[in-house]
Length: 68
Image 1 (cartoon, rainbow, N blue to C red):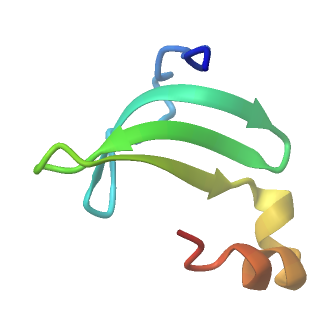
Image 2 (cartoon, rainbow, N blue to C red):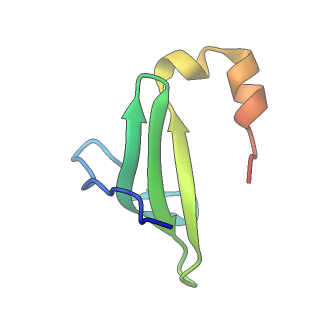
């Protein structure tokens, strides 16, 4: 399996979301931004932050809320 392309965080990106420290960007689109992130314990995850347009779509929010 090939490693995903990672892009540096931008000045507009928060350093932390909840318990997750953001490491890099994976992808960005009008619907949101996907990040690689880690916990204090070193657990690696992907965090997706919805864009404004997607947050206005109740069905999208319901579909993605709490997705693990």
